[in-house]
Every structure is written in C-alpha cells, then in structure tokens.
Amino acid sequence: MAINFSNSNRWIRAGSANNFYQNGATSRSTSTSTQNLGFYDGSTEHIRFDDYGIVTNVFGTPATVMRKTQAGSTSNQNPMPMTLTHGSLPTIDVRSNTGTRAGQLCFTAPVTGAYRMSVSTLQGPNSMVSLLVNGTQWWSGTHVVGLGLSYLTLASEYIRTLSAGDQVQCFSHNGGNVWGDNGWTTLTVSFIG
Image (cartoon, rainbow, N blue to C red; front, top):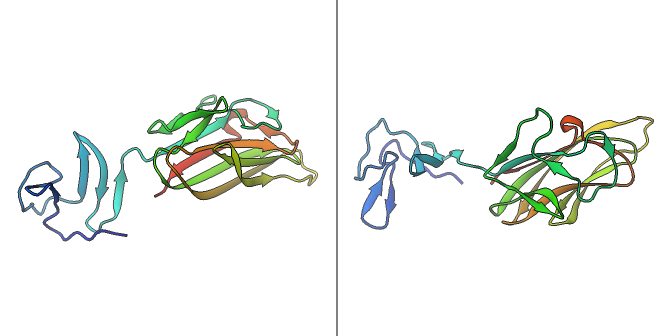
C-alpha cells in the first residue's frame, strides 16, 4: 500500500496543534525544494517516503549473515555452530539481531513480519541442511544424494512470517558432510516487510 503525497504540503501532524516537516520546522506550508517525507530521531533518519508514497529508506532493517564456525567438513549438527565472521569475511548484523539458542548463535527477529531466509552450503553425499525456527525443523532444506560427486554447492531461499523473538538457525542431518571453510555454509536472514 502506498501513501500518495502531492508535490507540496508534505507534513505530519503531532497531536492536534503542530505540523512537523522533514527539517523540523512547524507551519502549514512547505517550500517546493522539500522532497520526500522522513521520520527522524535527532539527526538519524529512521524511515523515508518518496513523493509517490514508496518507502525508500528504513533505518536498521533487520539483517544478519552467519557462517558455519568450523573449517573442514562435519555432519549431523543440531544446531549447526555459526559465527558472524570467518577469516576475512565481513561481519553483518544490522540492529544486533544475533542471539543464542542451545548455546549457538541464531538470528532473533526483532519485529513481527515477513523475512527472507537464505541458506548456501557446500555439502557431501547424503547430507541435508534444514532450517530451525525456535528449535524446531521448519523446512527440509537442501539434500544431496549420491550422484557420484564428492560434494556439491547448493543454495535455497525461503520467505516466512516470523513473530518478534522467533529464532532461526540451521542444522545438518542424514549423515553427510557439510563444509564451513571461509563461508562455504552461510545463513542469511533479512526483514522484507
């Protein structure tokens, strides 16, 4: 749903007396040089709408990338131990969404809404990597059958509604190996609306 703004008179009413503008001035008119409508906490912009009512900036949109902790291959880990960094890979944890569950890192949803969850893995034959939500298997995930290969790179993506406080992790099962060298196995979770 979009909010329609005309080319002028972009304002927010606080209570019943004042109308606040992007620059904090109060009155009922705005200059034509004012573009977009933003919500601020001090000098930090938290959300912005363009002239068509489309959200063009959300401060601190929840997002985290975690990587399998161990180098080399391991099998049957529930939950899979993960870290925010591995080697030279950057840390990504917007709004401090990483918590712990069962002694391992997890993504913790700060707000209720739809989230995109992506799992990328390097897996050996017979391995399965699935998603856990609050410690319970939610999706069967990626599965490598024999195929005569030593390993295979797989990726999957899901969209699911999470409630505030829900926790997301990965686990491996079915006996096959999953690699963790330099980000071969990653879990990415981000808020989409």
